[in-house]
Image (cartoon, rainbow over the protein chains, first blue to last red):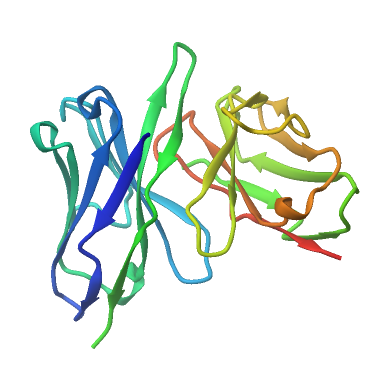
Length: 121
Length: 107
């Protein structure tokens, strides 16, 4: 059974840092690109970062570029999001999502349950 | 950045009725469009990919159509568990943007 379990969320002051983790199981983690998607309270979904299976390709949304860093450790079946210079508008539930790609396209076929990050003084 | 506009923002229907949700893109996304369902307190779930392909385990009452810039998610006969928020997402260009969502509520 495919499982994605996020951790590392919590309360942090503006300007602070936090590192999120996503533990993957039930599939060959090293074969899949992975994403972070966030959802502010009562709001919609926002894609924020992608990393390819071998970490050779990385993308960020403009809203987090230069502040957040995505990484992965295939030996540990884990995905990470290092978040620096946090702002109140970064307050959200952060989801990791697997990028399943067929010959035609890619889609987020499995999602974790999310971890809440609250940026407040 | 491709902007996806979903309509209506809220749709109020009764079980057994047909639901039609719309997603319009600011530029062509070819057939690289997916739909997700999200229930309160849960992660999103993939429903439809590549406009019209149902994901594994998704009931046949869910269908997708469209091309280019205009897309539709149809639920043929609403079940009680279908009342949720639905998001479209384009997979054509980076960033992979989502629509703002349509809330499907019980009338």
